[in-house]
Image (cartoon, rainbow, N blue to C red; front, side, top):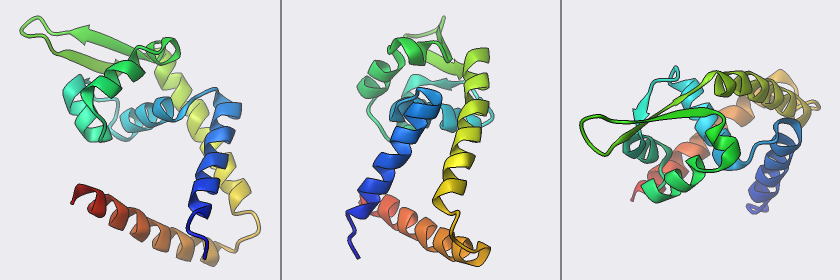
Length: 137
């Protein structure tokens, strides 16, 4: 097995997301995070921890013009913290992104049986869990 093939697959998925939705990886991750968490407003520090990136990286990502068009950033009246939540444009972009991801997944697995997809998904999820656990050590 050529373990580096995962990088090729990831690159192809990123290209397809960019082509279909005009999003980069950081924008995709932010949108999907809020989608998976019911667009719950979060302080930037908490969002950075949940995305497993530094606060300075998140701040840079949120300052991108396109990313700014998807979020509302509110400064706290009590301290220097800022809260992030998706705006209507971001919520609409999630719909487009999820449709694109479904199409990409269907294309990737078009020659696989349902059983093959189920086995692959189980093994792949296990690999992801192991990789996440190892990155915490």
